[in-house]
Length: 233
Image 1 (cartoon, one colour):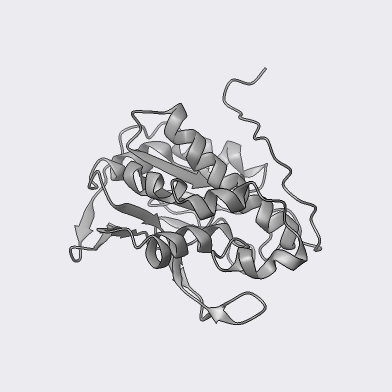
Image 2: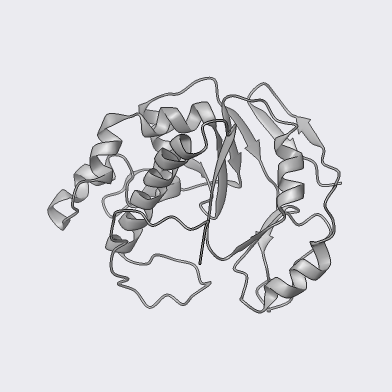
């Protein structure tokens, strides 16, 4: 019996590519849009389910998150305007060459409560979250970048809602990284906080290494009014 799993009223969409589990790349349009729906519904639900939560995180199911270290960093952040993750970008979006944007990579990012509220309260986005998708509606969905959940979050907040002020907490690869490098060797280090593409057999080893570290030390550096970096040392 599970007490911490929520079933959402949606279908995720059929996978239309040959992606492997813990692999990268697209899962096909239906599945990607399903992931965006799920992300929207999660933020919407979490705001109601956890009325006192200051931050809400979206994470993939193949990450290992060192929660004590993660929470130690959250405690050092502002209470409002926070958008935290690995900051990346693209020059264009989708099949029709729409403008690209910067965004926090989808495998783990965090919004402070006010930012999450700004996202889910945008009515055109809510409409798409419950609107059946078809190829004929591609352009309509693409205007809000609904084909990629992480891109959508940044695009709506920055380019559509224009939510301000935002504080970008840019996590470096000393903290957020893949479990293995290109040759298959472990990249786990003492500063690891969110480890991506974790295999089932990795969890026991990661818990053995980090499970007793319940009071880690965290530091952040304020680069500017809009940018904070969690320190690597």
